[in-house]
Each structure stands twice: as structure tokens, then as C-alpha cells.
Image 1 (cartoon, rainbow, N blue to C red):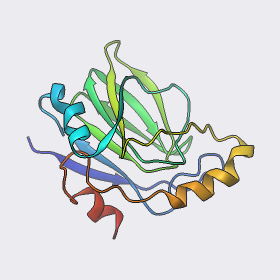
Image 2 (cartoon, one colour):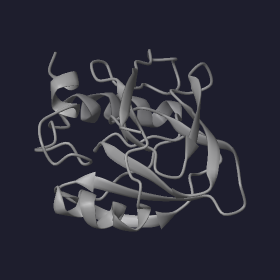
Image 3 (tube, rainbow, N blue to C red):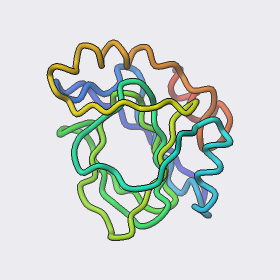
Length: 165
């Protein structure tokens, strides 16, 4: 039962910009012991972490990438906006969401809990696809730097190898 990665690239849908170059990276079974998840990503330089759920509406962050790790339960999360992909997300799974990529919880078990964190502990902004936020958001998304390390492995691979292709 090793970690398997999958990538999902989302086009700008006119409301949710998504990222022009970087795909979302999904890690299935990233953690056997989810009690170590937060400490692991913090150790790898992704901090300002929190525990909770995923908002039940489309939103994105224009100033930072985000890692989400399911530590309990399961959910169906839609990434990429209304036309994006619905991805099952269960305890032990992780996703690295590039700046600009929308995410929304569609359904979840009552115990569903995630941990979120950001490269370098950046304080994230909150965007919901409103027309008046778009111009500035598009500019910011392109300026978000690559993270120093993959939040799961603490190395370049697989995240940075996928994102710099």
C-alpha cells in the first residue's frame, strides 16, 4: 500500500481562475498514521496549519498554495470550480492545491477532518470568484513562488518535479 500520486489540471472557468501552469497533485494513502500528518508538513516547511473541514462553497487562495490532508473520515471534494473534478478524499489522503485552484466540500462523513498548511506559513487570502476580485487575483496567482519542498516527502519529488516540467 504505497502512496500513489495523480495530477489534475483545471482550466480557468471564468469564475475560478485555477492555476495557469500547475496541476493539483493528489496523494492517495500519503499517511498510514494521520496523527503525524501536521507535524510532518510543518517539518517540511508548510505551516500556519489548522484543523477543521473544507468550506461548502467554491473558494480559492490567490496568494499561496495549500496542502490538505484528510486525518479522519471521508468526503467528496470538488476541485477546479463548477466544471472541475469531484474527488473522493479519505483519511490518509492528501492534495496539494496550487494557488488559484478552487475547492468545495460537496458531502462528508460526520467525522471528516482535514489539516491544512501553507508553504512558509503564508497567511492565505480567501477568494470566491467574484468579478471584482479577479484582476488582482490573476496577477497574484502568477507571482506565487514554488515551495521549497514537497509537503509530504520533504524532498523535491514528486511535487516540484511535476510542477517544473
